[in-house]
Structures are given as structure tokens and as C-alpha cells.
Length: 72
Image (cartoon, rainbow, N blue to C red):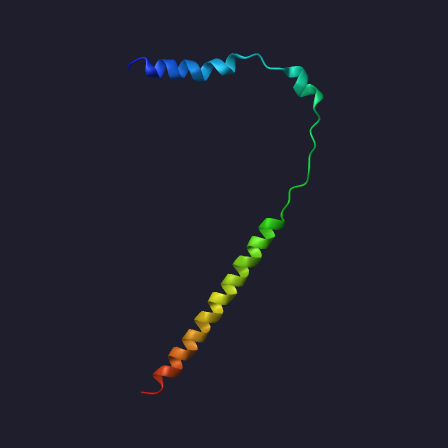
């Protein structure tokens, strides 16, 4: 039972002992693309509409509460 931790540690370190293939990495070119911000814009639009809806519902509820108090 005491050997489980050292054996697991040895198993995790052995794959990292493989020599790196630097020639393959040097041949590949890196393509830099512009980030896509469309999902962020769509999310902000949804949050803005939700905030407007909450403000509208709160305003209508406040007006209805004030008009309901006048009937006493």
C-alpha cells in the first residue's frame, strides 16, 4: 500500500523523459488570427435587454402599488 504513491509518481514523470522533437516544431508556422468578439457582444446585448426589462417591470410595479394605495 505504501508503494502506490511512489509508483504513481514514477508513472507520471516517465512520459516527460521523452526527448522533444524540436525539428517538427520549427517547421510548423504559427497563424495568428484576430479574436472573435461576436459572442461577447451578443451576451452584452442580452444582459442589456434583461436589465431594461427588469427596470420596466419594477417601474410598472411601483406605479401600480402607488395607485393601489390611493383607494383606501
